[in-house]
Image (cartoon, rainbow, N blue to C red; front, top):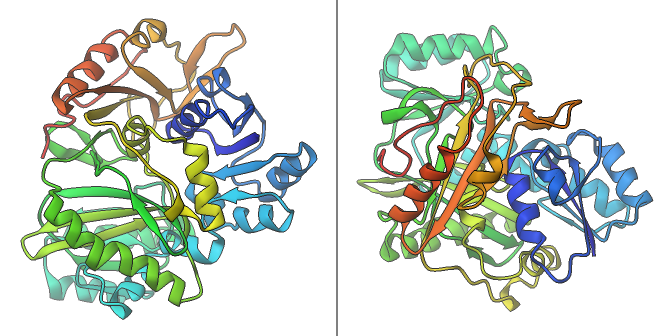
Length: 419
């Protein structure tokens, strides 16, 4: 099979790395890809959001299957366009991807189907939002309704901070159209866990629970990022909690989407808070998380291509999905200044040495005219190690990361130990 993966980050590198193991896959392509992806797939110079361009290219080059990995092209309806062109694709259709593309929609769905989540209200008028924040007090959570690269959430510790965030989103247009509608919700407490699930519209198969580390600095300090590292599995996600989540959250969500005429086929991301009152949904995503994907797929023993086809064909209940016993850790190496402004084009050294003991997934990398691998984004690399236990995996990821250098490189020192 000739398979195209849409996207160019660490998540896409991990998907391609897993697909390369499948005996079914004969050729891999990626649009647009990055310097590391170029070692496992042929990169195509098209933006991930170019629905028409990618659909035309996939048809012209007779792709047998396309994996649409990022949130933006899913929300734009790339899967719909590919399927309309006769090309089998993995990922939710536009009417199902709204589960991530609109937080207001997802909150309404949870309320309608009694899926546990935080108390919340949705606002389209700034003055009403400011008054509600004054009334509710802090801590409180302010969320942009739409897609904002994982940065559209502010956990405010004071009313003033919450109102400032609301003004930045609604009045100053910090996230453009994504912030014109706000969801304001209570601040839940407890460990936060991510559970990814393969879905075929009716059935779902969960992956090992993972834990992302969103804050930029150690001790969960600093601004939110796209994710500074992830571990899998998570000790606090016990078998009893897993059963409760399956009964109260996972299966009801898939059933709700089907009942709404929006069957979800793809990877459904459940962001959960294990509160004193029980597990509740923090957010849904319509795709693999990043960097959770890198950690979780490293533990997959089954053929990923078989699973993706089953999700698309509605036969997930007929596929055996097996996971390695042990642990995985993905440590993100970021550019100086991230998640704010950062330089690009800085040479990266030590990749070959690090690759001897870990898998180095590329996120924000490129090749310069001299053929050197250089930085090209905020999150540059995801150093990922797997071992028979999680503690060893964490230690091995950090040991491999010490081999790598680029000017301004920073990473958290407490991945796997911060919660």
